[in-house]
Structure formats: structure tokens, C-alpha cells
Length: 121
Image (cartoon, rainbow, N blue to C red; front, side, top):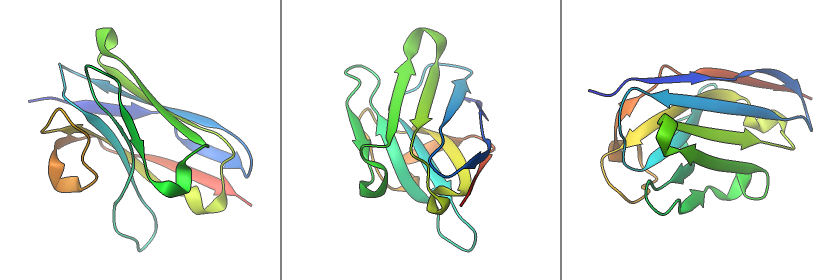
């Protein structure tokens, strides 16, 4: 059993930045960030493998968001720059079942509680 605890969400103006952190209680495979906006399905945002640090992003955040991880600290980060109103959502980190990054929620077996990100326009 792995527990994930997110932090770093909040309210920011459009164009601003936030950094999300996700601390895991143990070793994890690939890690991912997902988000769920009001009345929307949960969507993949970014993912990173454990050993090589290979990353994958959804098109809408490419060039603005950066995912990284510190394996020694069992922590994954999501640096979010140039935030837009449409980035407003609850952001969840997830620990993957596999070593590769998958973009579907079913590819992850542990989830954090979520952290709210609100971008005002």
C-alpha cells in the first residue's frame, strides 16, 4: 500500500505559476498527474517514468508544465507556468501499475486526495 499526499495548490491569476508536489510513502513505478475540472472527466496531464525520467504531456500543457521526480525523496513535482483559466481543476497524483507512462486512469493503482488549483482570469 502506497499513500500519496499532494500539496501546492491554490489560487493564482492567469499567467502565474504554481508548483505541485506529491510525496509517496514508498517506492513507485511511473507517476502521473491527472486533473478533473467541474463537470468534466478526469484527464491525464503529465507522467514520468522512474528509471529514465522519460516524460509525457497532454497537448494542452506542453511548453507550460514540467513534471519531475526525486526518487530519493519518493516525490514527484508538477511545475505549472503561464497558467490559464482552463487549467482550473482538482489535480491528482497517481502511482502507476507499470514502468511506462500510461494516460488512462486504469493504469494507476494509488491516488492522492487531490489539490485544488484555481486560475482567475
